Image 1 (cartoon, helix red, strand yellow):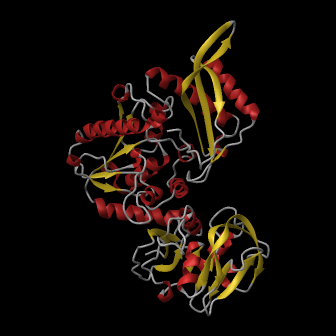
Image 2 (cartoon, helix red, strand yellow; image 1 turned 90 degrees about the vertical axis):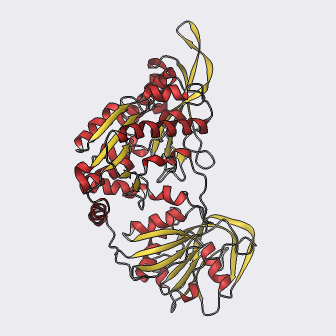
Image 3 (cartoon, one colour; image 1 turned 90 degrees about the horizontal axis):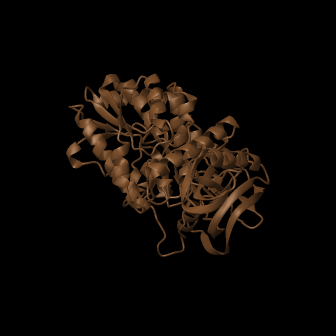
Length: 507
């Protein structure tokens, strides 16, 4: 049983980052809604209370079932979590005269194990509308900034700590050290590694599945590939993989992915259903309707192929931890997420149990597991590609001609990124077919043709993203090649929107 940290989520946009930072130190952690009732056992070594968009001063403030005052393990409150500890402990929290957001520097530091190794003047990231004015009795202030008298406080005997800033974000330059210090205070040894995960997961899958058979839909992406290889290592020929060409894949994707899977020793049934998908999508422009049609048609094709296999008991899926977290709101009930992420659309008559080997991993952890499994870098470090494929990169209705144009343009863009050395500097890139036409001149003739938008972003997990600052000379090369080689395109534009407020995909 691995040591673990429990993170109680009060709705902060940074909660997943806290978990990622903890796991970077080879300590397992789980995120639960703030209302989760923790049942302590010897594996739980500490509890972290996250930030929140709410205020402890509001009527709708979130208060946990967990009683931090009587915690058998160390507790760290971050931002809202710190304000909660201060208020419930008898201190004072006031609404700030103005929201404090952005970089700050620690101007005072007192001796405290949480701050060990953190230097005076260390940059931290603030994001709060409340300020702690007075700490509870018997607590000590351990850090301040020019504008925040209580940037950190602690009760050393009870091992209760609060910090007003966010150590989990990149802008807190010594935030990782603070997280490491808390894990040390908790007595964590860092026993959670990719190799240990593989060994334990393979054993668990064998015990869980036994002699049953598993069917799994592959997409060519990192998650489904790593999940399939893990299952294959556990149950061998009992795994049956189905790869469906929905007609909305990248150029030559259907062929290339089959070659890759063959090299991995996976038994894959390849199904060309492109004509079926394009027929079902004919005349449909609404993004959500397109997603649902693509999802529904995939299930129908997948179901038909799965029935040909005979006695199958399990459905394998490449679900990862962000999918699990994002499907449950802070207050408990399910929330609406993009349709193609939902598992609930499976036909009831399939009656398959779900097996998800990666459901507790983040994307970067999936890649580390894949590397340990011997999967090639070309597969592991591919850019993410949306489930509906080019269906949500063609704005408006979908036709075979538009798909062909976009595949050709996308192929040029991606190959240029690779040949010029920018591919691995970008987290995700692709082309968008815009529902507009523009006037152009080619030779001595005026044209009225299509516009292609280039989209490239940098990110760590897709939750936030900045547009990739690719050189103008490179963009010029791509634009010229697309216009010269892709018939039907006479204009190329580049998207310089970040997330938020814009999403990575256009639909």
